[in-house]
View 1: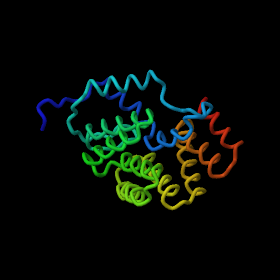
View 2 (view 1 turned 180 degrees about the horizontal axis):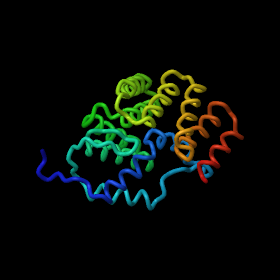
View 3 (view 1 turned 60 degrees about the horizontal axis):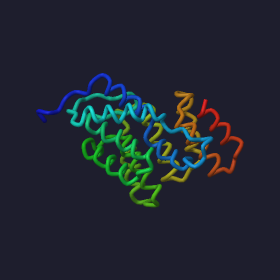
View 4 (view 1 turned 180 degrees about the vertical axis):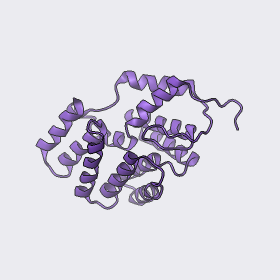
Length: 212
């Protein structure tokens, strides 16, 4: 073990939990809406700063068997890399995000949220082979994850691998049944209805719910 490694402080754990509760895959889709202020559901700057401070406070974190809310991993360091990946996504630094997510998966090959995020980024850059690989790996590691992680991984597999948009919408709506106020899921649905279905009214409805 690393002698300089320490357990995260309660404040650091809380800050990481705030970030990881907002599913990383959904944050990537929010990039597409960055130019539309009415659907910008990014984390508030104060929360962003809180997370960055917490990550600086814990530069080295020892491995523990601890799931953080909806992000299940056996490694605190993998969780940290995943959090840094999401911060990079929100800053539109997709290559940096990719490197953080890859390090998270190297630390915990069964980290479903990081695998799903890599799949989304691969699809975003048009690499269908890599998207298939990452999304398939995510589905192969669903046994011990949270219900939310399972549904998100399934939704993006349906959307980006199978191309079954109606089925993906049904899965995202299943997430909303469990988490009615989940902003990033609402944002995903707004994007899908606008870009895939051309249903502006429904997109606006989900967008307004996202901003409430």
